[in-house]
View (cartoon, rainbow, N blue to C red):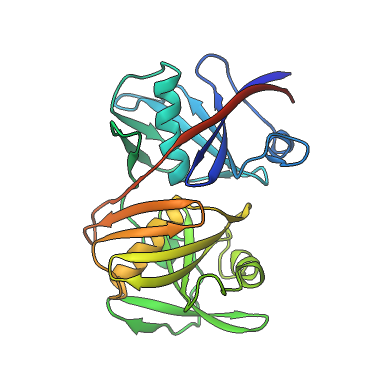
Length: 283
């Protein structure tokens, strides 16, 4: 079948966006992988599907698939692209919209300068909610949070574990450019302690209001930016006593601004979203 698509990016995290408002979109995992393939398809970190509203008070449904074909819970950079897409396509004229993912409702705000703020919801810290198997592990308490020892093939790393609607394990590094993301990232992602796998973050603290970040994403590998990863890293850094409540995050694809007021409050992320090109593909 022929499928219309829009290619978009937010801070270098790139997406294929599909409109399921005008016609249903039901892709197999193999079709998702074909779209995401950078050599034989369009190429993307994730595939985003704009669905009709699932109920009162919700403007749209929002489905997210990683490049490996699995549906995932959350993508903050994708959410920003989602807002630009529905406005450019005339699906909404609102500056503030509410969308439902597989496990939460997000509020997205369009700004006149083209940046988008996403209410990412409150982080979850209970290991069972991540999910994270902490049986038999003894964490090291730092500030108001824990660093968990994670045994890898080449030794042990300490990670802060939390969920932004999807699982994250964040480790601090001295030099983001020298971090062994390609070697350690896959080991953390597929670690047996994370039954649904995990996004592996590598965080360098530059100042109390500035960090550098790389993320090895679940099912996608290292990406140029990861919105939920930026949120998780900043939240972890705040609880560990390293960071203030508003932090600029330098990713390889651009800058994101993350704000968090503390326990029980939502994380807010602001950053860019751009349309790259549109087209049609046989799938």
